[in-house]
Image 1 (cartoon, rainbow, N blue to C red):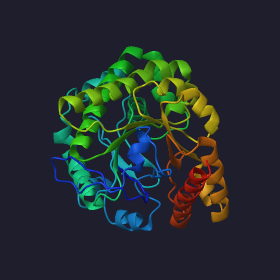
Image 2 (tube, rainbow, N blue to C red; image 1 turned 120 degrees about the horizontal axis):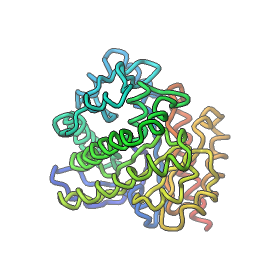
Image 3 (tube, rainbow, N blue to C red; image 1 turned 60 degrees about the horizontal axis):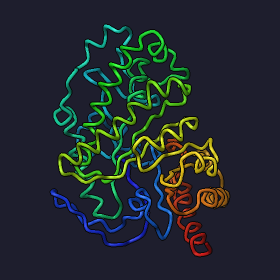
Amino acid sequence: MQRREDVSHSSVPDHSPKGFPKLKNDTFLRAARGEETEHTPVWCMRQAGRYLPEFRETRAAQDFFATCRSPKLCCELTLQALGMEVVMVPGKGPTFPEPLKEVEDLLKLRQKVDVTAELGYVFQAITLTRHSLEGKVPLIGFSGAPWTLMSYMIEGGGSTTMSKAKSWLYRHPEASHQLLRLLADVVTDYLVGQVAAGAQALQLFESHAGHLGPEQFQEFALPYIRDIARGVKSKLKAEALPLVPMIVFAKDAHYALSDLAQAGYEVVGLDWTIRPQEARAQTGKNITLQGNLDPCALYAPKEKIGELVKKMLEGFGTQRYIANLGHGLYPDMNPEHVGAFVEAVHAHSRHINKHS
């Protein structure tokens, strides 16, 4: 789940069975749907809030997953694997002590997962967070995408080459598809559950897309990205839940932007390696773009951050656009510089709108 920072105050009815506070600021949701906005909404992807001193102090005293399982302490969660042990290693991230090594290891995985039973604490946390926000900003739910989750499960954690996971795609294509289909089904149910719990938008992260070439992305990533969008929307309709906007963010997959724009998502997220004008040309007029300032730009002086934001906004334009970084915040970033980024987006987008 991600919290977004924005500051407009329109009053919007929120039809919810859980008695949630009315949403006071729908700028982000309108931009995601391609509607006109008075200014550019902005939020930041962040790695479990690790750049915030408050998070680091809380985290130091508690096991990460114990924190996740306590709705009162939880702000950000990730999908756990299917019956595999996952530990959070400080400075390294999620780690699987016993990764998948051979095709036979797939038999150890749960083939049917009741996400409500397995991840009920996640949904409780989302509902609690939605109430705690008091309608100030929308709440964004998220999940990793199948290829990214598969790569963690086989590599056992992060990797610079993803050679173990990629070797499966070449050596065991059928087993790879079996695992990816299983993951896609679980992710679909997970995202639907988040909406039922109170998420007002969803983002799918294919963080490891850059390790795939165009052909492998077409075969092993894109079909499941499409299926998740289709499956989530179908189930939301069937369960009479809100049809929330969906974002797909496939890092380093600029070779697939035109395909991602037709994958069933309202918003395509961009990393910092592509020019705004090129992204617009590849995705067309009916997609909202999100991104894409280099996260390392936040190490610059505040004045420089403002200049970079102004250039970014001029490149994207202020409509059908959500400002963000091209990836998550890093743990050592100064919160004041994050604030400078948000303030610069707000100031420059209003100025550009006023003079356009």
